[in-house]
Length: 208
Image 1 (cartoon, rainbow, N blue to C red):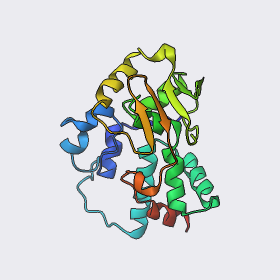
Image 2: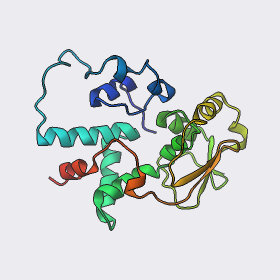
Image 3: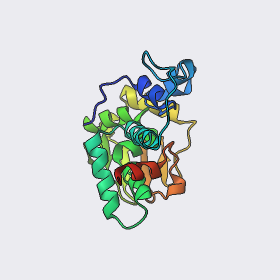
Image 4: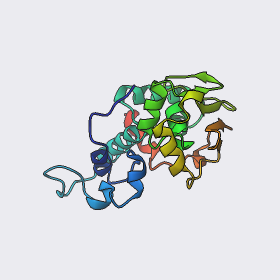
């Protein structure tokens, strides 16, 4: 399981944008991006020359941090996307979006992707009725995701369920929060993937 060794709020500040790594805190005035709208470090306010390479690198770093991946994992997804028929950048985002941890988060069963990975790793999540403990598990159309029967009353799930009531899940999935169950209706198209990422810059970087 991927585990970040750097403070989540510092990651968001480094990208100068909310990556929603801390659950509900990201929606409040306590969010570090709101309180400290500049990159961390002693040279935070130094003017940076944004070269082509700099922009490409930042796009890749932002995507890795957004989905909680290491470089090797992310590179593997890119190589899979290159081999798949279609637009490479779009294929890359599709692979990332249909990861089990990302779907569990979008369905409102976890407050963040990091928490979703913990729930999955501890055996609290099922796919088509069977426990799956691999956060990177690639989901398919019409697969049903749910919280295991014995895990529906644990504190993280109850808190996530309460806060998810006001959120709207992506249109490519359907969710029943009362049952803590949802279904992937289809693999999302690019216009259905709402992420603060410019995948074209990532493809340009890896294509060099």
